[in-house]
Amino acid sequence: MQGSQFKSRYSRMGLGFPSILLMMGLMAGCATVNYQAPSKSVTGEYLAGRLAVRTNDLDSAARSYATVQAFAPGDTSLAHETFRYSLLTGDFETAKRQAEKLVRVGKGREDPLIHLTLAAEDMRSKRYKAARTQLSLLGTDNVFETASFLMRGWAIAGDEGPLAAIAHINNPAPDAFTGFSPLHVGLLYEKANKAGEARVAYQQAFVTLGGPVGQRAFTAFLERQKDKAIAQEVNQLLAQQRGPMRRVGLRNLERLEDGRVSRDYANTTPAQGSAVVLYGLATAITEQIYSQRDAAVEAGFTLRDPDLSQPMALAQLAIAMDPEFEEAVRYIGSINNVMEQYDVAIETLSRIKPSSPYYEQAQIDIAGAFVAQENQSAAINVLQKLVDVDPEAQDARLVLAASLSEEGEYERAVEVLAPSIERLQNAPRADGWQFLIARADSLVNLDRFPEAEKDLKQALTLAPEEATVLNYLGYSWAERGINLEEAFELLEKAQKKEPRSGAIIDSLGWAHFKLGQYDEAVVNLEKAVSLEPSDPTITDHLGDVYWKIGRQNEARYEWRRALELSPDDKLKLVLEDKLENGLTGGVDDS
Image (cartoon, rainbow, N blue to C red; front, side, top):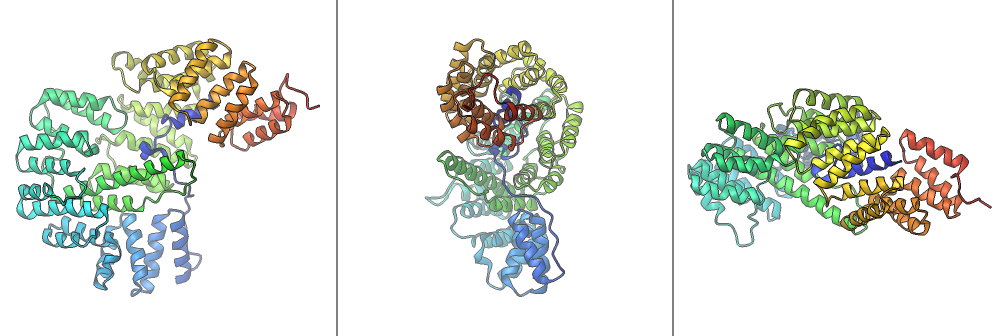
């Protein structure tokens, strides 16, 4: 039970396949379906388009609406739908043609994205005055006001030079949002060969809303300025992170040692700068959406799947202006994973080259798409190939171990993690505890608890305040009836850190159960099930305590429900035995 229980925690704590926003941790609930029109009729195509929209199948929606619109070229509502779904799928040429048509018939103001699309075309075609005209028509929505203001700055740079653009950006309206401005001011000052001013702006962007672009731009700038000491310090900080920025830091450190200099963001064009504007807005909107959802879920609300169409459209426009914009490509691939459009996600993420610092994370996301398609072997192959050729692919090793563990290949998971754990001795990582916890999980499943306990204690030394570490070590001791006083201390500390974690509350309840403290156990386990109703192990635990306090009918109900929650094979056998024989030593039904 311990192994299966931990797997749910393992994924919830970010140790399984990270998706975007991954960094955000939620998945949409719509199924992926490839639709074909039920007939060759216009009506059939229209209905197919509507159905595709409901399931996030944007490619099919775009094709269906384009087909219907060809039968009724004068229908502006169909033109708008064709525009929208063409843009969302990255078919910029079709989106542009429909946007031009809508503007000609006076429908441009109905959707700011129409004028933004035409402005993007003008920016990439170096028609900067025309772009400024389109941008002036975006309206007063905060998102589009910010886009308009910064992109007009880049259009000014195209016509009048970077210093004129900086003057524009440094003179915003009184109520304008300026959080993204430092990054663009830094890019423009460097373009104007004003190194001192660029450094100040880049530093501000690095610690505020510059995001991954700001971090890459600043470190590249330091290299070009031959500021090796500070560049090493900043990149060492990046190298301690998980994810793509760790790879940025490692590659930059390697380049510094070789005496090479990065050309990233060295001479940003107006189109590239505008792409950075839209990408920054897209990621900020997505983060806000998920932050608000987290707050709503915390308050007990049930929510529909998030609408990510606006940030997706902004990111697609960013790629239209800068097709090599790696950050935006990976973002769109991740969004498609969230929307359960896995084939599109795999195709998009495959565009990221091995030379990119985003390659490892893109391969992890591709593996995640394969897992979602129940093609675990393909996911494992993707990750295994990566770790075989790239000794620095430590994040991929962690995810590969999780995948192998899910398949019951515990010995192989232990082997995969061994090099990463050995590296921790000479190159400690802030997230090093995750590798130790992962190996401990596989060792527990191999009935090698003394070795697992050693890893868990080391993880606790590395991360004494991490709830996952506290929970797993405390649960392990309580499960075995050892070190009970310390086990309860660890579990109670974990619960204080994450009071709404069903997994942690379950551990505390199970510890009471193992001590025969059934009244305390039932309170905790009922709460845990209310927080994690789809966890088969927690549901199984609740059944056990119900049996012990004489509520056998309810116990069998919970065990039966646990069986319906797709437990692993080991737990499934245990549940089937309980349903037939009850718990040894339980209270008799009579």
